Image (tube, rainbow, N blue to C red; front, side, top):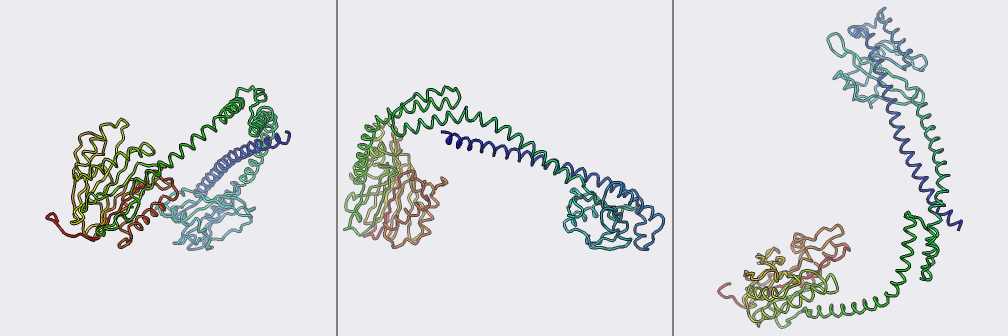
Length: 544
């Protein structure tokens, strides 16, 4: 037991310790950044104040004279002495006045005041050096062209001189022309020491606070959390082994917090599981019975759809092929094709609302009604009007179906069709690429009594094809819930060389394309497809 307590305690303590360290580190880092920023800003402000003071010592109108003549007169020496004194009194490294080249890379020194402890050597009047730091060249150019102070400050660090900040300002003559650049390099002597002191103080206080917190927290964890949780875990492990409820240990945990709630829940769970196990055998047997019946229903539904291809081997005027893949054991989609007489072929595709057994039962009714009325020789629009009326009579479940019915006059190629709210077929006509068949979408079947349907007619020529499908094709989803879409479906038929291929191979390629798009995502709806191709006609009537 001690080993288990120690292991659980270590996990909890480690997580709290890690959280404490991360929190303290975040607070310390933000404080360190803010502290450093404030200190650097203060040094930079001081450097600019020194620069303004140094500029007040200059006679800008004589700077060019000093450079041209090299003359060092009493006025020059007085300015130099005052700059030297200012360097020492402000603890600056350098105060210098230079004339910059046009490309701002070369400096010609007019005045150069150097702190005696800096280790630097003073540059004489007229000394020229290519000493402009490329990192600051754009900022210096901005200063010298606009006369404005830089929006940022120049900061650098060297091993020899430590951290320092540079202030740079333009020097204007009495005519307002910028004639020189004045720079001040200010030593930030307190910055590094202040940083180290800050870090060590924060770390020391943090460690002390964490240690004191953990000492108190360990005792609290053992008494209030670890021991009750181990009792609950031990009881759960015992119950998993023998499946016999024993509530005496759990009843000793009388806490009113979440741990007490968990103990009582485990006790109730043990009682419920014992009862559940007793019922599980009966439920499993019932589920197996239902599964067997669903398998039989699946087979019955599959047997209702034409599955022998070619279905009319003696007829070479056309080819037809169809498939249906239900989303569940049984589905609501169906297709059908049959000869009304020796010169008329009917094709049907439909999608019943909903899925599962209810949709399958409704599908049987719809399929039977459509086939029975079509075989009497009714026109497609009359078939749908009659079927719609009969379905509406006893439709308390409120189900409906979208359907497409077409009747092909084999001898002439005349194709008469009607659409009850179904997806428009794709058609390849007259050697042109696949495109949507003009289709006026009427209202769904079983949705409203008294609906009138309008049939349409085209003439199909040898080589023409019509592809019918349900929305399980266009609404197939990928893992990101994007739709396969009508545009992708049309692009498939237009982008593939399908001419001359068997119809079964064409639908198999489409099925594979849908599966590749889905990339393993669960099939959400039945996928039903039917493809009809005209091989030849024997003649034309007056409609042709």
